[in-house]
Length: 401
Image (cartoon, rainbow, N blue to C red; front, side, top):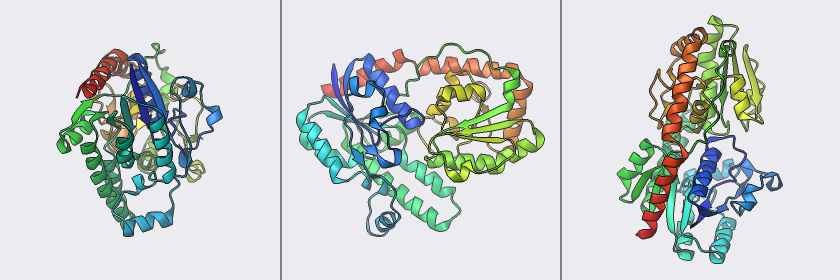
């Protein structure tokens, strides 16, 4: 049995965003090996969780170690960091003394075979980890993080904001490369992510997609529901927020003029008040929803209009495993190796979006075929047996070095 310390930059709950779902998927896989997992997760102020409301598994199975940490974005600190530092502000926010104090406490009190960083943001503590542990250290790369900020910079009209985002992207790129060269191995969540790290480090890089639990075969989507479109995603993640604004400003008005009875339903956690207060014909703003699966089944045409970001699209996989038809940009399915018009319908602009929405509405059989193909693909590539075997071999390889 592997003794594992899993380090995240926040408590991975509730399971309403891709990051939390990816961490939970890893925890589910580790149980199959099996592993004894200790979860080190600051209770970050930007995603504060009431610890007493957490499911029992966080104390019984994962033995959560948490503490309050202020990760609020401070405009003065951000500006000072930009002018007087060369370090990424994304990572500097986690270099607070309390994090080092708590890490030291857990590492001097327990021993581990594997220490796994879920993303790079606490990677600045790697020297302290090395000082107090002889465990093999893994970076699990959910994304190539700096690429997200580079793409956001490219899509930003404000010159000052663009310069700031570009600066932060460059700093984060340098940090990600240094970290990749310092850990013992890398678990990349997609082919594209693995390719980046293989270019910059000789360390062993394994591709391990995110485990998606199987669902019972759903009932076919009823034809009258195919006029209900949905977007579901965490709206404190800038690529999602940018995608929603682009959808509302550029794509939806064209579809609504042509098909005024169609509806668009938008949901997600950390819903901005400015977005909630928008009044747009045919658009319903739901905010956070208690049950993502029920929301998607009610509004089954899933729209993924992402234009930036990297890594793997957990929400897209979730929609596929539910057997739902999906309209997506290429960026929205990046890293999944899906086939357009087989697993999803492609759309890069308003004209293509309208065309695909009309196709689905007029061809219920197309929605059924897409759903069946998507479910089969997820089962074959993201099922528990395939991924558990790869993860177990990776851990054994590292411990043998």
